[in-house]
Every structure is written in C-alpha cells, then in structure tokens.
Image 1 (cartoon, rainbow, N blue to C red):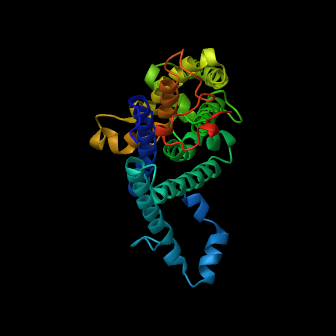
Image 2: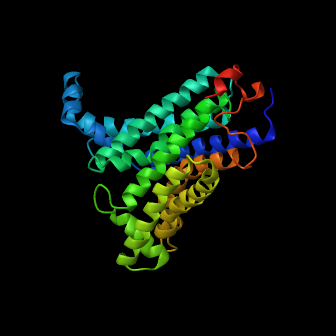
Image 3: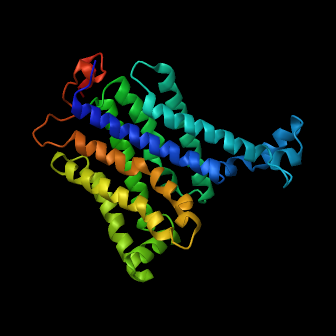
Length: 304
C-alpha cells in the first residue's frame, strides 16, 4: 500500500542517509586505501596466507602490481557501491535486498572497528560511527515495520546518541587531548588561535552531550533534533571548507567532498527524528499505534 506523504519523506531521508554513507566510503575504497588495512596487516593474517601457499609478494604486492590486500580493498569497494544502490531500490517485500543492507551494516561495523584500532583504541572513535553502522538497520526496520514503529525510532535514537556522545567526547578531550585536526579545522574556518579554538570545541562538546540528554525529554527533543541536524551538517562540511583550495587539482574536491557524503547519517538521522516529531500535538511516536499502510502487520507491536 502507498505510504502517506509524511512517511514517504521520512523514508526518503533514511534512504539518502544510507546512500551517502555507502557511496562516500565506496569512493574512499576506490580512490584511496580504506581503513581495513589495519585488520589485514597482521602477522597472524600473513602466517595464515603463507600456510595456504600465498607468498609475501602476492600478499603485499611487489611495487609493480598490487598484492592481495590492495586487491581486496577495491573489491570491498564494489560491495559498498552495491549497498549504496540497494538503499535506493530496496522495498518492504524484498528480503534479499534487506539482507544485503544488513550485510552492509556488518561491513561498516568492521570498518568502524578498524578506525578504532588505527586511533589507538580510543572508544569515542568507534562510538561516533554509530550512526553510520546503524543507518542500514534503521532503513530496513523502517521498511519492514514502518517509519514510526518503536523499533525504528528507538534504533534511530540510539544512533543519534552514539554520534553526538562520541563527537562530544572528542571535543571535550576525552579520553585523550582533543585531536589536532579538530583544532586545526576550527582555527582555519573561524580564524581564531588555538586557545580560542579549544574553548569553542569545549562548548560544542558540552552541547553535544546536552542534546543527547534532551532527546529523551519530550518538550526538548525537537529542539535537540534540530540543533543536532544543523550541527551534524556543519561538522561534516567543515572538512572540505577547511581543506579545499583553488590551488589544488579539482579544488581538492576529490580529497574532501566524500567526507561530507559519508557523514550523511550524522545529520540525516537527526533530520528524520525532527520531521517525525515536527508537531507538538502529534501522538508520541514511541507509543502511538502505527497504521498498517506503513508496512507494519501487527499494530499491537507498536506500543511500548
């Protein structure tokens, strides 16, 4: 059955968030070398390859040609591209496509774990990627049960909290000093010195934590979602704004624009929640029954 227009918009937001995430990382894996290398450049992995008859040159490459690790990076890129297409084509009666997106979520979990390892096992790095890891799951839940179903909404709220709690922890300098690239971007964009940039990031970090709390209070949640959508977009575009230059090939677009695209869940998930709660007099989306037309087959499962 056809979804009501408001629900179609909510579903479109989730589709675009998932598409951006997968498409952005596909670009990274095709154009650069993705973060999976930290999982593969291990003595235990090479020992396993050696046992099955793969030589060192075949494993790491000879300089004249790529090795097994580089080849698999590009092959994984194709999986991300397929998942990006699935976000736009998946339907609520296509279990195979949904399974593909769940598999894509698994790839994003591995990617986030690799980023966590490369960041010296700093927990906020893994937590901040929660929105990217969960956006395919949220989309599948929205298609299977409905965009207003409690499972969809709760999962989106969990993703929201992970994004901004992780981001806020970094801005506040936990568990280690605030990353230099955070300070550098703030200084370049706002034209302030390092001390002022550090102060601004502390304030931003506190706000990140506050919106995570505000999300669970009905009078505050729309404001929290609005702030998070705007701030999530601004932190994503900060990369190309700080890094792109007229002196670079393609103005540096090939190096920085994908940073915005792959972070689409950071502002699309809050935007989904904002439109979900757009009217103060609407029933609470966590407790109200969901129409059969939204894809849910058992209205009773939509009550907490």
